Image (tube, rainbow, N blue to C red):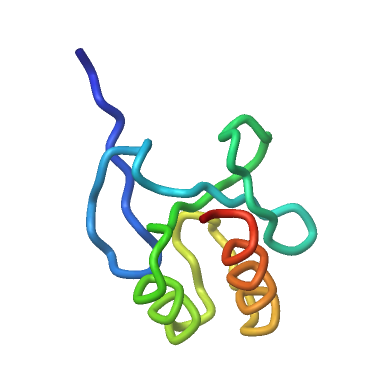
Length: 85
């Protein structure tokens, strides 16, 4: 059975897709817990250390093929903290 592997944009660790939370770039960054929204997406582990690493990184996100400013990343992390438990 094939298990899709994705890379966490926070820590850089590769993991099965089911262990990560997807987000998409639609105007800003939006959580995609159903993994069904269209568009370029990225993945994060649902843990505080990955959120902090995601906030500290440079603005360019390779998975999204664009730069994302710190305020948009902070808004996404705040949403993920409330959506994903």
